[in-house]
Amino acid sequence: MVTEVMSNEIALLAIFLLSIFVGFEVVSKVSTTLHTPLMSGANAIHGVILVGAIVVADHANTNLELGLALAAVILATINMVGGFVVTDRMLQMFKGKPRAKKDSGESK
Amino acid sequence: MSRNLYDLIGLAAGICFILALKGLSSPKSARRGNLIGAVGATIATIIVFFYANDGEALHNQNLILAAIAFGVLVGVPAARKVQMTQMPQLVALFNGVGGGAAALVAIVEYLKLGDGATTAEVIATVFTVIVGCVSFSGSIITFMKLQELMTTRPVIFPFGRQLIALTLIGVLASGGWVISSGGSTPLLVNGLLSLLFGILFVLPVGGADVPIVISLLNAFTGLTVAASGYVLQTTLLIVAGTLVGASGTILTRLMADAMGRSLFGTLFGAFTAKAQASTGAVDARPVKSGSPDDVAILLNYSQRVVIVPGFGLAVAQAQHTVRELADLLASKGIEVAYGIHPVAGRMPGHMNVLLAEANVPYEQLVEMEEINPTFPQTDVVLVVGANDVVNPAAKTTPGCPIYGMPILDVALAGNVIFLKRSMRPGFAGIENELLYEAKTTLLFGDAKDSLTKVVSALKAL
Image 1 (cartoon, rainbow over the protein chains, first blue to last red):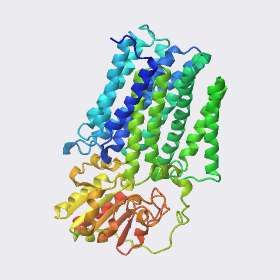
Image 2: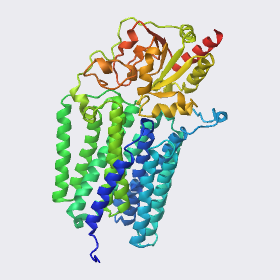
Image 3: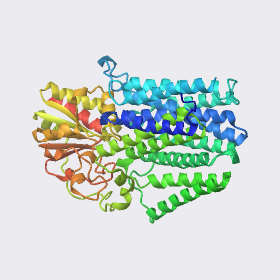
Image 4: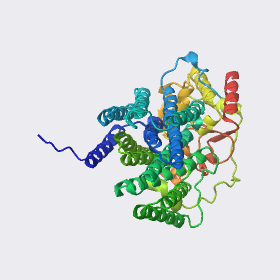
């Protein structure tokens, strides 16, 4: 039995490299119709930097650090929440809506 | 919460992101995919509150919650209210703030670690700051271009190439300075130079290529998130950031292919292409303009009509009127189809979204490869607010900004009707020779007004 645990750095490197391949693989066949929603969805996913922003806001020692961290929290939240909402709105357009609702969807 | 449990839940969130991207790649599962992604992000955000401070309430917890609430209050209404036509620039803006957030996270962590940071951590920090800042300022410029707050043409300035190269050297040198000597001043210089580089890097990109740049910057932001994940030793951030970085890179290439552009040409095209002397100047050559009645008669006696929608249609909010016209023609036994260029609108797939919003049947939306062979059998092509995507210059004029982009071959049809506001060239700023051809009729005016008039003229026939 192997007792030595994989070193942390190597584990992170493995995760990084495997994620690259997964990222390449999952989007390799996508029709042009979905380019925009896919980009927008991927954009929302990197909003998860919010997690990092929360961690640094917790650790912040000085007011400067706290201010910057809170700014990061705000920006990341806008990225994440706004990104998912706008992607959903785009994709809503693709499903067949009942004809009766024709005009309610248009807001100007 | 133990580190192991936290990492396990983080792994679950990472899997959610993979499933989200997978789902988003196919029309049927796209909406569910996005939802799964949102669930993953929510889980990740909630659990960090139970982990970051060993299960105790976080320091500054109320401030953090207030900041999140503020972000939601800004982001959600913006995403809800934005007109579908302005969506691409909103995505650009969201991407930019994400890049900015990643850069700030890295800066704060760097300040906190001080001299205790390992070289690897400092390198990751510098990477995050550079790429995050470039993504932030670059996205702001793409936003301004798409919002037409500034010119959509490539901005070329004297010694531009040298200036960009010099800035890039400055960015790399100041990055090296941070790594070798540490401290906050070098990092500040590095960040400012990176912001400047982001601006200079995007300015020369022509309007039609902006979507590719947004996609590229999106991939960049993904990588910065991965790098800050390394600094913070958070597996989830590495997974999520790398996924976005990798899929974003592929997507950027797919987009560039759809537009028939090389990525290199897009980013540096502005420096190699010759400036178009004739652009912008009003051409004095005669054009044939017609009345709504002429157009109605032409349409009434045709057998097959292809509508080519462009961004002008979206701006005029004419989606519904164009569908009314199509329905009317169909009721007269005329075959109607929409020819959708991959980049009609502002981004690939943008036009499909806009027309779907107006309940245009999905079957009538025909992609470029399928519609092009049918143009010789088409009597009338109605070009509504499109220009660049039908511009033969893409085939005939080497060196023009859209050269090499596949176009809709509307010139092969019997008649071409352009609905235009004016003789102003399209988004890419290139003159369209097709406007001067004998088979072309121009109907000037707001697309919605013109279409309404054509519809009533057609009803009266």
